[in-house]
Amino acid sequence: MLEHKSAAHILAEKIDRDGPIALSEYMAIANTAYYAAKDPIGEDGDFVTAPEMSQMFGELVGIWLADLWLRKEQPDHVHYVELGPGRGTLASDALRAMSKFDCNPQAHFVETSPVLKAKQAQLHKSAAWHETIDSLPTDAPLLIVANEFFDALPVEQFVATQAGWRRHMVARERNKFIAIPGTQTIDNQISKSSAGLPNGTILESSPASIQIFGELSHRIAKQGGAILVIDYGYDRPGTGSTLQAVKDHMPISPFDSPGTSDLTAHVDFHSLGNIAKTRLLSVHGPAEQGQWLKALGIDQRAKRLAELVPKKADNIRAAHHRLTHVDEMGRLFRVMAATSMDWPQPEGFVYGDS
Ligand code: SAH
Image (tube, rainbow, N blue to C red; front, side):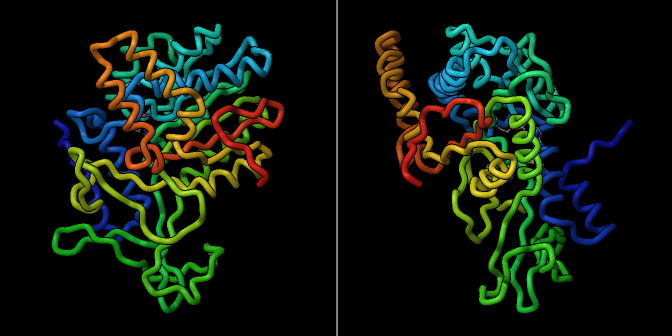
């Protein structure tokens, strides 16, 4: 019988055999094991996401997509693509809302977790699944949605030392995982100078996110369509670690239990936006989630739903608050879109002079 090894075991063996590994490798191994093992989403799991709080979230995403499609003169053939669709709830609410406008795209899910794939299949009988973005169709415009996907992708960290930048590595000390600066300086790989920065300053980046976003931007430029990214993140370059772990709705150390806690990092919207611009897409936002949802009519939708189902009025009000209030998800979560040059300007973003 094959011995089942935990992620912590695999990581420990690897580090003991080969020496410290890059933080990005640690995060990739830990998260792959984590999502493969269980459905972590919901009150009984480790964290709750926006589409699980209320149908309003997915409906407004669907209306946003349908509006773009309508104003682009309703191309017959178009694909709905979701990256990391979790339980499939967002796709379900979005596609239902889109079908009210006669927009019925083929659904494509990019998902690696077998457990979540099975959950998604219960709701979506005719979707197509993809292990990576490489097999997504090339024949028609793509309407791509990613909610809390990019925050799960691995990050690299670089630490400023007297001698220059060093990569953050994960080692083992007395049976515990710890982060340490690598032994060699790698200033040639980093455009920012460490000179003048205090020792220990951390620069973070997610090469996996840049690669995926860059490739999808290229596809949209060629095929038409849009990508909508919703996540917690920052819109200016900064320093400091944003790596965090959540287990059972509580923050814990990212090094305590790899593979049994959700490892995430804030999304670098600034870099994603820049990559999309180099692929000649129009970039919109990032806007605050609360403002974006309000611009799309969440207040009216909440009122209407509460009238339709008075028994649920309190729940609907609570979900509306969590999704939009600045002290809840309203400000921390950002919404950014990138659209093909020959597609219309999307709704929900405030267009100023800048
Ligand atoms: N979007 C969902 C789920 C967010 S959790 C929601 O809002 O509820 C992150 C999702 O991304 C999960 O479905 C997870 O299995 C998937 N995921 C994480 N890393 C991935 C990768 N490298 N490739 C594809 N899917 C990934």
